[in-house]
Structure formats: structure tokens, C-alpha cells
Image (spheres, rainbow, N blue to C red):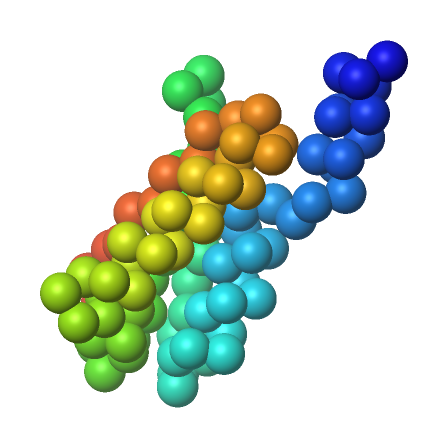
Length: 94
């Protein structure tokens, strides 16, 4: 019974991509250059983020604190959903 409740709870939580869209849309200035992709494989889910070059500093944060916090929150979200979530940041295209 507890497994059924856990599965139902996991379906109610947002995906890694939805979470990143929610957080990063309020963090970055160039929302039109924000690209988030989600790829699933047997190891888990990889969320790939690309922002403009002027928003890269905001995404990384001082000493990498912002990106580390995002990775920690993704791990917590993945724990709730019983899956592994990872974050990869791509170099800005512009």
C-alpha cells in the first residue's frame, strides 16, 4: 500500500524540466534564450540548460553556489520521484 502512495505522490511532483523552468524563468533576464532539455536513459534523467552569456553568471552564482543549490534540489526531487536527476550547463551560443 505504501508503494502505491509513493508512486501517486511522485506523479504529483513536477518533473526536473518543469522545476528548472519555474526557477530559471525568474532568475534569468533573457527568457527567450533559456533552453531546457530533458533526456532520459537507463542511468536517469539529464536536464541540459543553456542561457545567454549575460545570464551565465546568475546561473552559476558566486563560487558556484547557485548551480550547486539547483543540483541539490534536483537530487531531492529525484529522490521523491525515485529517479536520478542530473544537471548539465551548456556554453552560451551567443
